[in-house]
Length: 74
Image (tube, rainbow, N blue to C red; front, top):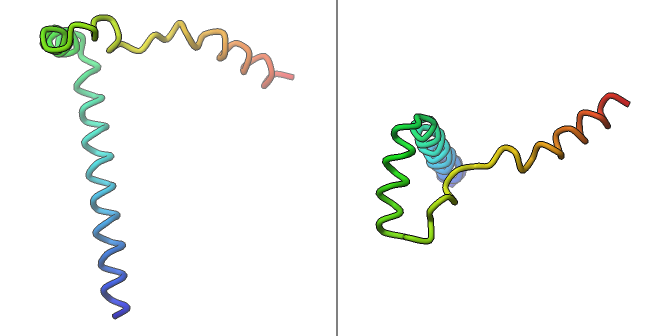
């Protein structure tokens, strides 16, 4: 009976590890600008309201990073 619980935990670990690797791989693929433009163009034809919402705006967190660095240096 104890071995079955260990197998279930190992299976869950493999499942979560595989999901994490898939997300990491998709993120690495999406860092290429030409791939990101192709995916955005394809998705915008299916979902017109998606235009401009797929990219992450780094400028939105600029003030928070500056505030964090100021607090950290104190």
